[in-house]
Length: 138
Image (cartoon, rainbow, N blue to C red; front, side, top):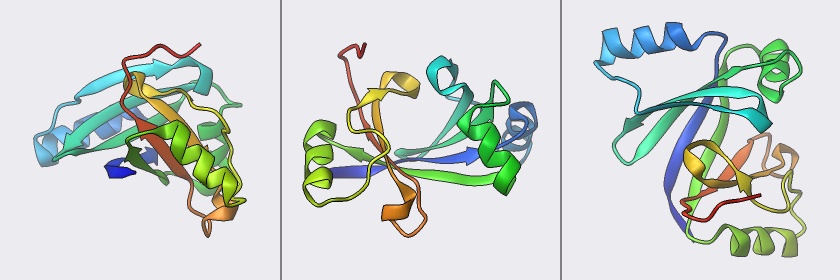
């Protein structure tokens, strides 16, 4: 069911600062940069081994990342687990009465299928499920 830690999401105010720091200190260049319009976020990803560190900058003042930054400041936003079948995983979670933010997968960064588990169900941890996908999501 769980394949790997897919990525760690970090909320930041400026992606440009992070790109400079990651380059100067660690010699890393972004592996991808994109805007996920429906989540109102710019994403820059740096691969480290088989996982990624994703830095998230809001694109609007009412985006979830913007609200997170206002409430908690910059820092760890979520942990994402790579799963082999996101729909089966969501079914198992629902069957165990664990609260979900997303009951159906949606499109995330890098064209992956994603869904979030509510942090109230996981001791305050926002958990993202992520599945590689070649299928388009509406």
